[in-house]
Image 1 (cartoon, rainbow, N blue to C red):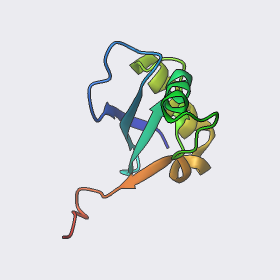
Image 2 (image 1 turned 120 degrees about the vertical axis):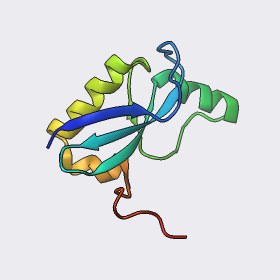
Image 3 (image 1 turned 180 degrees about the vertical axis):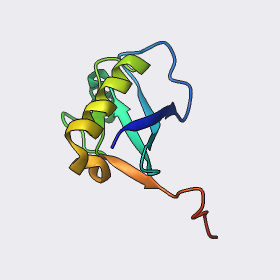
Image 4 (image 1 turned 90 degrees about the vertical axis):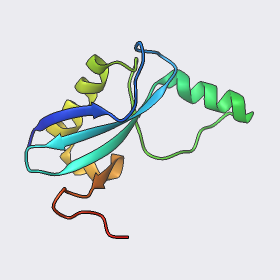
Length: 102
């Protein structure tokens, strides 16, 4: 399995070291996942704002800087080496032919 598309769901800015982003990943088998990537400094900022010395949140992938170079490297490692964690760290998206029922 390999990645055919990596797409931020919103503008990721200038490669901050204190930020987070949701990233869409499309695989060559047709599956699509959304992953949350965060920087270590973002965790520190959340703890500071909440007045806590710990952070509990959704599973995410931690990158040194939030730019496409670091995002791409982390996601390629996840897909290439840790395939069993795709559903732990990512949210499987409906395929285009499945549609969304309301």
